[in-house]
Image (cartoon, rainbow, N blue to C red):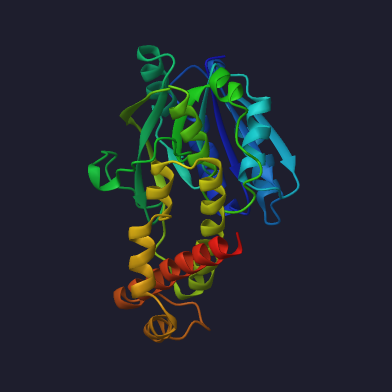
Length: 299
């Protein structure tokens, strides 16, 4: 088998059906690829979505159910069950185009040992999709970004897969990318290996989750830096004197109170104005750097 599409899901039933259908509607021969899905302890209608998908699957479809354990452990479970010579990682909020697997394999034919990075177009809805032409406004500088990346299965297994000590949000794919980069694996980019990435505009009901997620990401950033004490890590995570000093000067209790006031009432779910959205993102950024400092002091 030439390729495995691997994804993990947690409580994304509303998106998962569309994502799986897109995975099954690929231009390559169905015998050339498979889909390996890890259900990470979903508590919504995900099991029903999976059962319907089994009836529509056009290629080999492997489902792994696990208790909620986090993305790194889920990825490793998927890697263990994969059969393809290449493993293509996507997320459960990603809609691949029909030529997606074909383009990843085309790049691997040209660069057999490389990582292949594909393009992602951010959209607010899967029901109103723009023309599938990637542009630099959607560029990600991540070396290994599991929204859309593939690698020889033997290569990812050789480095031990994902580090499952990353149990909270963030950086587990960056850790894999650093290990691959330091191991001499190069990356190529194929803008035709396209996905639509669901990125809805945050609402008032999302603000507290944004802040909690930022704090979790700060904790895993410190974890990443301990594993990889390298300038790339310090720059990516903000764990460097310039960014930390800037945020110490800019952020504080008065700033947080002012941003909270700008965000306004969060008791009802509603659309955020541009001003409120900027304030919400400012709160998340302040929470991230506040948590970084707490973690560093505790060490």
